[in-house]
Image 1: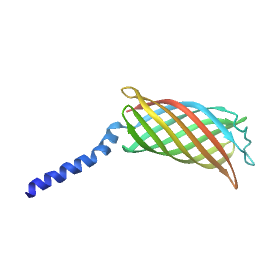
Image 2: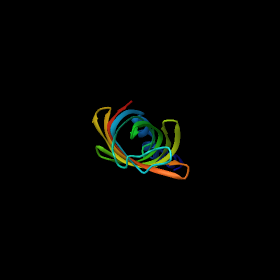
Image 3: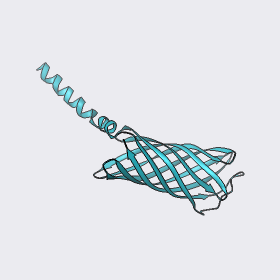
Length: 167
């Protein structure tokens, strides 16, 4: 009886670890995306163009921690009027796996550099990812973030689509 109980406990533990093993098997992904950035509001040093879009592009790394949580460091480039802006962020994405589709939502803290200014930002994101071929995924996401400079803040909406190469 004792040996049978040990086997049952081992079998349950192995089943509990399957999602984590699936995330490891999924591997790290590298991606590139393009889209639009729509700023709203302004600060003392950053003039906004209030919802006037600018081209937005960037690079992403997708790191599965467990099947339902991925960390995604990213770098995005866009403009506030004539000023270049670069975001460096780390997204905490919570995954809802569906057949042939992964929905996700999450939290995105980071920093935005505009000319000589570096300002913190926080945001929320949502999107989906779906496989195109064996190790190439298509993803579409929206991100709304608040950029802080002193007591002032501005908001930026990002809408991107891109591809993710999974190792």
